[in-house]
Image 1: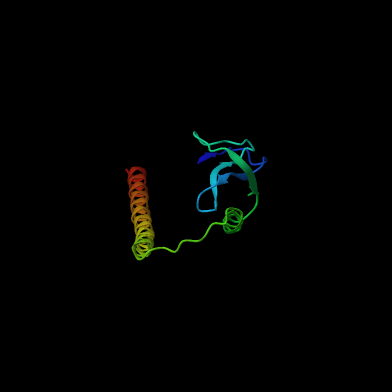
Image 2: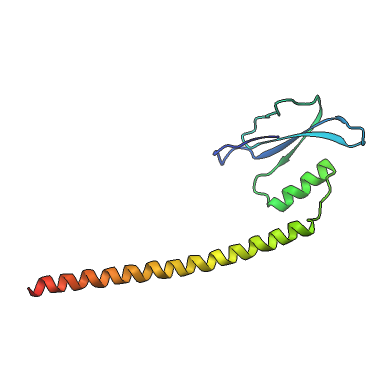
Length: 130
């Protein structure tokens, strides 16, 4: 799959799916590419294209785009395995710990900054009286 992005916000934002001939399982072989610049990019070794379908992604929520993609490709949602669920819980716990660490670190840095300001003010006041 080739993904091509652009920084131009005013241009089109489309996802183009290139369908190849039917596979032995009866479902189309999908050769997908994403182009937000409007150009159609292809994979390095593309299968013969039978048809294409596009999804306009501009100003759409990611869930709406996914729903439309699944509908066009006749895709099915795959449930996470127990291992993946455990991994997702561990990652969420890690994110929570990281947030706590960020808050603590910000407090430490703020205390150091206050201490440096107090020392700087004390040095100034000693310099004025001398």
